[in-house]
Image (tube, rainbow, N blue to C red):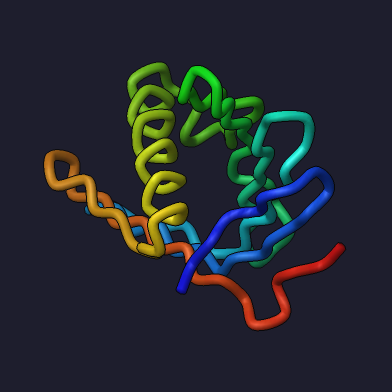
Length: 118
């Protein structure tokens, strides 16, 4: 069952697959809980950071801190912000997969077996 970091300093690691009609991104995502915010980064197999983000629980918003150039378009950023928010809600409820039906994008965040470190 998928879950999110709950307390300050707690970290979780996930295997990530993001499938789009014209390609995919795979790698790992590291999320940490820090000062009322969830911080995360998706890194591909080559060590390139695809995106870094923060999620503020109080106002239920995702902020993209850094996005790889090929995804750094205003319309893609808007979809990513919305979809990452849904992914976080799903992880909180034990769902590791979110599908954006309109854009045909599938997000899968599977917790790594040794993903919890303190």
